[in-house]
Figure 1 (tube, helix red, strand yellow):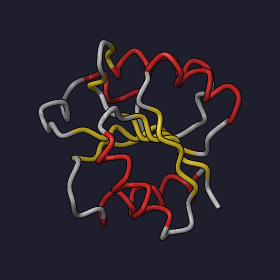
Figure 2 (cartoon, helix red, strand yellow; figure 1 turned 120 degrees about the vertical axis):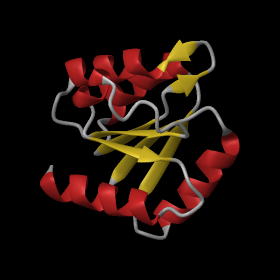
Figure 3 (tube, helix red, strand yellow; figure 1 turned 90 degrees about the vertical axis):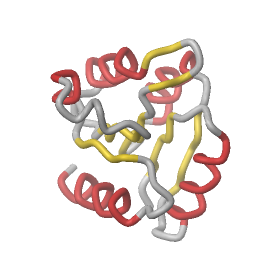
Figure 4 (cartoon, helix red, strand yellow; figure 1 turned 30 degrees about the vertical axis):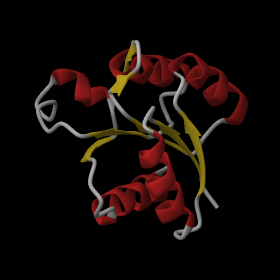
Amino acid sequence: MSNILLVDDQPYVGELLTDELAEEGHHITCVGDADYVMTFVEDSRPDLVLLDLYLKGFEGWDLLESIKRYDPTVPVLILTAYDTFKNDPRTEKADGYVIKSFDTEELKAKISEKLAVS
C-alpha cells in the first residue's frame, strides 16, 4: 500500500480522490493547510505527493520547491484545474502534471507510473 499525500484545500476533491485511490490500494492523507504540508512530509515520508497549485493564502509552487529541496526523490504530481501551467518552466521541478477531472483514470495511471519508478 502506497502512502500518498494529497495537498488540496477543497474538501470534495479530497473525498473524491480518497475514495478513488483507496480502491486502488493506496492510503491517502489529505492536507488542506499549506503550513502543515512540510511537517507531514518530514514526519510521514509519503511515497508520492499530489499538489494543487492554488491553496488559500499560499502558492503551491513554493511547496513544490520545499518538498523537492527536502527530498528530491519523492514524486510530486501537480494536480490542478488549470491547463495554463503546462508550459510554465516551474513545472519542470514536478514529476508530472494532471488536470483535475471527475474521470480519474489519467491520474491513476500517472500515480502507478511514478510509484513503479520510485
